[in-house]
Structures are given as structure tokens and as C-alpha cells.
Amino acid sequence: MREHPSDRIDFRSDTVTQPTAAMRQAMVEAEVGDDVLGDDPTVTSLETRVASLFGKEAGLFLASGTMANAVALRTHTVPGDEIVCDRTAHIYRYEGGGYAALCGASIALVDGHKGLMTPEQVQSAIRKADGSGSHYPNGTLVCVENTSNLGGGACYDQMTLDGIASVAKAHGCATHIDGARIFNASEATGVSVADMCAAYDSVSICFSKGLGAPVGSVLVGSEAFIAQAHRWRKMFGGGWRQAGLLAAAAHHALDHHVERLAEDHARARTLANAVNAMPGFSVDLATVQTNMVYVTCERPAAEVAETLATHGVDVFDIAPTKIRIVVHLHITDEDVSRFLEIMRTAF
Ligand SMILES: Cc1ncc(COP(=O)(O)O)c(C=O)c1O
Image 1 (cartoon, rainbow, N blue to C red):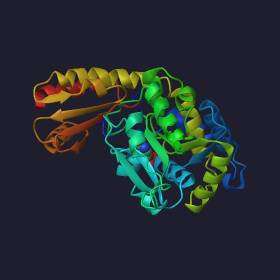
Image 2: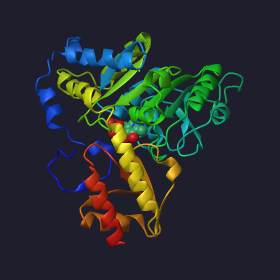
Image 3: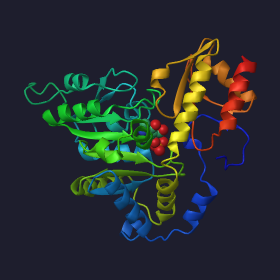
Image 4: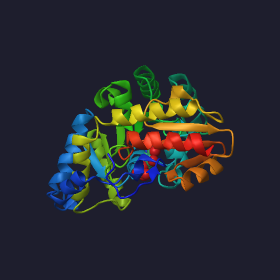
């Protein structure tokens, strides 16, 4: 599906997708109200729909994945608390230190494999203030990211996910999933999002990544959790008015863009296999489980990205010798073939 006016192949992120004509039409036709006053029917129906899809009591529509995570972390913690997450987690690496600035919390980092932690690692990272003579911060929240962005789009197997939740619960910690790409994880593992998240207290879900909406995330959890999250969203300035225009895009994404994620995964796999076979480039194929391909380059990644750009292909040089390729709904089979041809001739 190529529905945006560019002949560049944009592999930088699945966030670059533009709303399709059908999605724009759904937005135009959306029934709206004032969501701060609680009467935008499209927002309300989206929150209810997503909560029920995830087997949770309630949902809250927010502007971004970062905001959904910030509100979740703030709702789960008080200043002096500590959050356990993987070293590469988005909440730690890319959310402006919100856990510190907005929550007053510290982070206990876990050295997971490809962004994925084990229950044992989580257990040894949890520190409790009680019994420490007031030396330790209070570990109260465990946050997992599924799929893991910096882990190359790898996803958790269900046993590990459930194991982490039960270790967290046993130590009196709440649990949150940064599910920016949780539908990709569900597609890859065949586990429904409700089963995947059953043991977790809250989940943030993005519509502006693989699902192709312009903006928007939903945070789900218990009634009491979402009521408190609603207050934090307000205090962070995130109460919004006729947001139904955006909620309509998310509804459309749920109707039309979930099952097609399998196509993105298949294209990513084709691309990864082919690039891995090229001299000077390698891909850890075991991590190519969803829509991302991290390519290790023998030459500087910045040089590879620059050369590709001159041929109309955009990628991120995410590390000195690594480029990141993300497949999404604007990437066609022809784009993959054209990219592979460029790789063969340009390097
Ligand atoms: C894993 C993960 N979580 C959260 C976010 C934040 O989303 P947003 O850019 O909408 O704030 C991203 C963004 O790419 C992400 O990859």
C-alpha cells in the first residue's frame, strides 16, 4: 500500500506512515464532542473498545506513546520509588528522563538480551526500601517493552512475560507493558493481546506506529488505575477536546490495519535474509521477529545511510555500525526489491 505522495522508500520508522484516504475519510466523518467534558462519543467508544480487547476494565486516550507511558509511570509510583526495566527500554532511553522529572523515580536497569529481560534478572533488580535501613529506593514497578524497539523488534514468549509478572507481584511491584508495538508482538506469537497482557496491571498501546494512525495511544488498566491516570493526564496538560477526529483514525486502524501487520513481518524477513547474504552486511536473523531489521555494517553506518539517501532510500544509522530498517504499511514488495537492488549495486 503506497498512499503518500513520495517515491522515496522511507524505512526510518513505522511512525512515518501517513493516514490512508480511507482513514482520512473516517476522520472527516467522526462524530465528536468535548472529551474534557466526557462527551466525545468516538473517544469514549475507542477507550471502551481497546479496554475490552485487552481484557481490562477501562482505557484512556492520549496524544502519544511517551505521554501514555509517562502517565502510567506517574500513576503507578510516588517520588522515591524505583522502576525496573531493560537497559534499552524506551522509557529509559528516549522519553526525556520523564521517570525522573515527572515521577521523581529512579530506574534499576537490567541487562536483558535484545531488550528482553528474564524473571530471574527482574527478581534480582528489585530493591525494597523496607529492611534496607532506608538505604534503598522502593522498587514498586516493573516495566517491559513488547516488542522491544532497540531489541530489533524481538518479542517476549508468553512464559517469560508471565514469569516476570509473577516475580513482580511476589515482590509487591505493579507491572506495566510499553506496548507501542504490541499488535506486532501478537501477530508474531499468535497470542491474543488479552492473553498476552492478562497478568499485567497496565498497557500503553500506540496507534501511530505499525497501525498507521497519525497520532494517539490508549492506556488500559483497572477502573481505579484509569481514574487516577485521568487526573495525571489532566495535570500534564493532556485533556483534549474534539479528539474524536483522532480516535476515529485509531478505530479505523483497528478495523483495517491489524491483520495486515503479517505482511510487514514477511517483508522484513525477506529483506533481512537477502541483506544478511550480502558481503559487508549482517543481520542477527533470530531477532527479526516482527517489522524491524537491524543491519550491522562493516563500513560506518552513517556512510551507508548517506549513500542510500542519494538513491532515494531513508534509514536511520542507529549506532556507529548499525542501520535500522523498519517495514510499515507504505512499504510494498516492489520497494523491498528496489531496495535490495540498490544495496547490491551501491556497495
Ligand atoms: C517502544 C516505544 N515506546 C514508546 C514510544 C513513544 O511513542 P511516541 O513517539 O508516540 O511518543 C516509542 C516510539 O517510537 C517506542 O518505540
